[in-house]
Amino acid sequence: MRLLTIVLAVVTLFTTSATALTIEEIERHWGATQNVRGTFTETYADGTQVTGSFLVENAGRMQMRYPNEVVLTIANGRMLVDDPRSEPVRMSLGPLRQLFSTQPNLDGIIAGSGSDERVTTIALQDPLNRIEGTVLVTFDNATGKLLQWRNQTNGDNIVTQFTY
Image 1 (cartoon, rainbow, N blue to C red):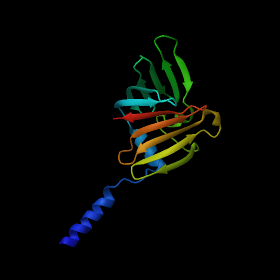
Image 2: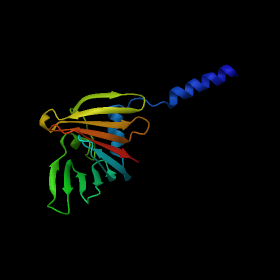
Image 3: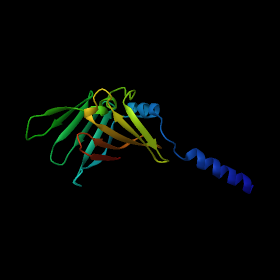
């Protein structure tokens, strides 16, 4: 009986521990994401932090609200920065544009990946437009949720962490 208990404990340990996500699993999970809310914290290279709220309506649309009333909307592979003190500004999403589409497809933009028992991180870089930099995107292995992205564009190093 004791041997059976040990065998069951080992089987349970190995079947419940999370393994690295495949690119297909990331695309599938992110593509199915709908109506997810939480908070985010952005940390800039100088250590300054800003916290706000976010809503992922679906894989192709995300809204981030900052405490200074700035609203960043990601939709259809583009980003709109709406500041009530100035005109709205449209910007490129860089390598994130393929993740933020209604059908995420990361083919051809993955520059590398790595994982441990808890998270999988992929490096996204557009091979046709390297000037847009690299974005490291981290997902939780157990849930597939987006945990963080690190934007390394034009020498900037901005880390955005997401809490659900």
